[in-house]
Amino acid sequence: MTTAPKTDNLDLATSAQEMADSAPSGSLGHAAATSVAITLATTRDLPEARAVLDGVTPGEVRDAAIELFDKLAASAS
Image (cartoon, rainbow, N blue to C red; front, top):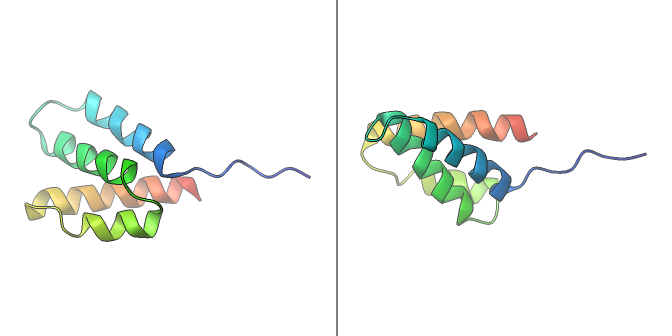
């Protein structure tokens, strides 16, 4: 019996960075995806990453980043 490989923070960071790269520079989507990519690349696990995203400012970037993070995290489960 085999199990599917677990998606880790770096895998999700790569996905977020690809989203940032495809978003228009200076857009809300670019800022949110970049925030998620950096956060995931520099934290140990999803709960830590999620906690760090609570400190992102301004609020509209934080909200968009958390929404993107939640989508990525759900796809990892």
